[in-house]
Image: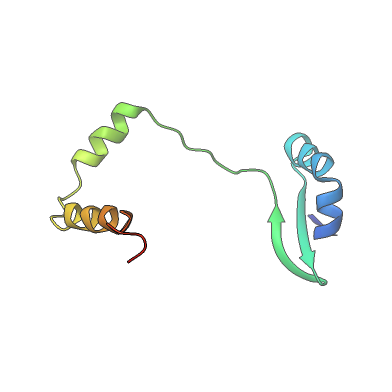
Length: 86
């Protein structure tokens, strides 16, 4: 069961609603102009892992030969022009 509240109400009393979600597992549907836009609910599952597992998973991914080229292009785009007044 969920409770519908306006986004304005949610902003005004966010701390209270977060505590209700956290401790009572309540669910709130947030509305904007009387239309549902979001849901405030408990996180159903948080998956955490270990660093070594992430590194091992990344090593199993296929190489992307164009990735280094993409990074070089992005970094080059961040460089200022030689003469900023040109």
